[in-house]
Length: 287
Image (tube, rainbow, N blue to C red):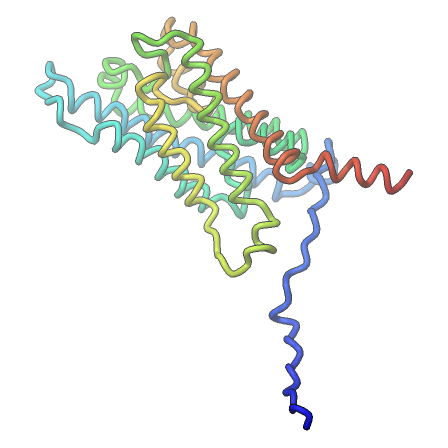
């Protein structure tokens, strides 16, 4: 007596795993994109986003210092505190990346742009013009803060980054490297196209983890350097405030973020994603 076996129907195509192919790397110099309005629109978006980012965050820092200044009638427990400042930075990144991701990619940070350039996600002209737009936007944003609240701005340090008392420059440089590594690594992971193919059932809102990364890094490094992890943010504040101490230590807020971005790009692309092994395998196959 044979046992009847019920045939299992074939799974429809909709339930099959998504095919995944690595997107081709961006060319080093793409002359074609220089003729497109979308290229210049993206640069404008980076400028405006960085302007708004610096305007809101520097105002938050100055407001906190005023509310805790005993000479101005403030109290030690007044104001938003370090937690509130960290929320301001992380929250603005979440908002602005969400708004500009579909236009420019929502970099708002030369270190992020540098890391994506190293990973061949953007071309050299786009990376350079993004960084210029970000720095100009930062200068404009801090300039607006000074124009609206000049007395408070000059009295409370203008939001410029500098080493806190008790910390040396090596400690500050290490904090900036590690902090930027966390940020850029999060950017790579949150925007990885392979995630959408592999975990298509898990919707990922990329700006959310990026904003949280900025928030967490600020909690850790505000007491050390005031938290840079964004050369445009540090540059804009230094230009407008124009203080000798801020300029003497300014190199930390360029070298640290760029080294951190380099490390994050290498780690994600060549270790986690195995780009070097894939390239070697392709070379052996061709040979």
